[in-house]
Amino acid sequence: MEPRRRDSRTDRLSPTQLPDTTTGRALVIEPVLRGGRGAARTAAGERTPAAKLDEAVGLARAIDLDVAQSGIVQLNALRPATYLGKGKVDEIAGLVKTHEAGIVVMDCALLPVQQRNLERAWNAKVIDRTGLILEIFGRRARTREGALQVEHAHLTYQKSRLVRSWTHLERQRGGFGFLGGPGETQLEADRRMIEERLAKIEGELGRVKRTRALHRESRRRVPYPIVALVGYTNAGKSTLFNRMTKASVLSADMLFATLDPTLRAVDLPHGARVIVSDTVGFISDLPTMLVAAFRATLEEVIEADVILHVRDISHEDAEAQLHDVEKVLQQLGIDPQDAAGKRAIIAVWNKIDRLDQAERDRLHNLAERRAAATRPIPVSAATGEGMDALAAAIEAHLAAGRVLIELELDPADGAGMSWLHRHTEVIGKGLNERTGRIAMTVRADADRAAAVRARAANGEWRMASRG
Image 1: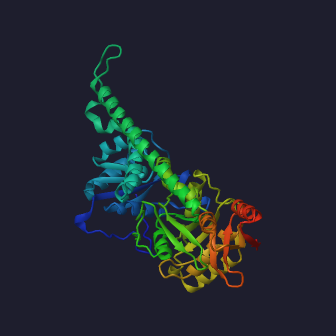
Image 2: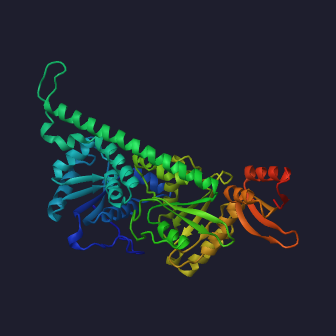
Image 3: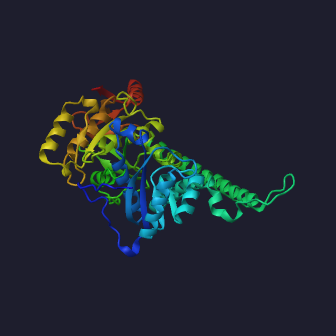
């Protein structure tokens, strides 16, 4: 087994836990099919097997596993029974015994039968990539909604693996007709219990979805634009969120440090108020069941007016992470390449403070050569560098396609002022001393602007449009 490569740029994979807080000793295995998945991804300029192994080790340490050894395993072919060949299974069994490891993390998707056979061969708990991510999500969830979403995904995953929990009932006793053995009875009972629990969770998540829809509808009436942060896990979204909103959301150099979504109101430099939403980080090969379970949360992204795609531009696999995030956005029905879509997507090149001056200058020059609609914003959420440029870019994207209108209202027209506050973005308001009327400057999309003009045409307001 090839030893894993250390990431010399940062200590993101260095042990941060004390010995008495670890979940257990573990081995992390990165299987790579020769001439298959690993070679194809490398040839396409995406993630290398060594980089995937580093990420898997980071995932293992995110749940306080004490990684005793990790490495890449080259495979000529996938074995239906054990995924790995017999020689590799025996080799890893020796490593498990040598390191007294109780857990083996396989950075791939295992079938239930493969997982069970490997556990027997190694006499240790085996976790595949999906199970590992589910475990992390289960630990990170803090709200009732997050716990429900994780439980739904975990039960969906576990439903096909029930036989692992009942190894003493694997051989069914003979029976006549519809009479089955005790194994069949127990497994069917467990499946019914899981399906009943899934149905209950789906009902509760449906209520969560309706509640979120009501919240979004109330925000539309205000209306405050939504700015959603998305990106690869550990790209610095929560640090950027804290910088923008002066909040104190947990941010750490750790994969999936935060899970539950957070929303805060922010006033931009020129007075516009927006709602900033921090969302769960994405990752390569994110289980589809997690995307489905967290769809209610990710609908904040779907409904966003502006999406900030936060990237760790200092990471050696930044381009591969870009493709992985875009893939998840496409699963949500968002085309990352559609610059003329209903929402703006701003690329935020974060963590430039980790680069030397020459590389930072190169990135700034590269960004300046892009078209204004697709120009990335280099920032450092940790130091605050580039935050003014980011705020200006958000304001510019929000203003695009909106009409700026100047109005004068009668001071007694409280209902009209209230309507404007609810249905448009009020940029400024003051008293016109010459006319004695209330002067208001508002910004609205095409539909709301038409409604404003219609009310002005009825003689309610005096209007001078700048849009």
